[in-house]
Image 1: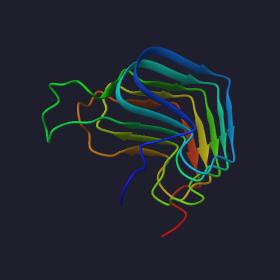
Image 2 (image 1 turned 60 degrees about the vertical axis):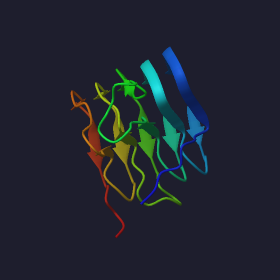
Image 3 (image 1 turned 180 degrees about the horizontal axis):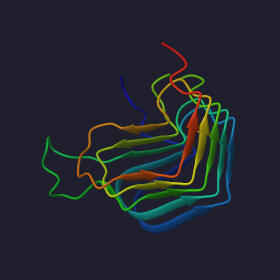
Image 4 (image 1 turned 45 degrees about the vertical axis):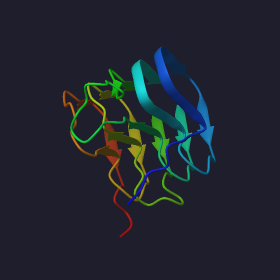
Length: 143
């Protein structure tokens, strides 16, 4: 299993970013990718449809378990989005995929029709992630 560090909207070494009301349709890879150091990024009221990979993906960078460089996404908010028909090419993708990140809030999203779990807490690094009031159905459809 591997992940592509890239997306239609690639955010790295940035803080206080809001993606609001955008539509990601027929993107062959990831739609929104938060890489390494990001802080206080909000993705709200966006549509994610017919994606080759994932919707919102976070992936920090550490040296083993050492997070002292703080090159990980923190305080990400994924709120009120619509995710459907994801993972056309990459079957391990999710609507929201978290890897080497912490303090993520996933709330009030609609997620359906994808080959894997809608929300993937890959490694639990840092913790304090909250998923609440999401409507999730018809996931894990492929072997």
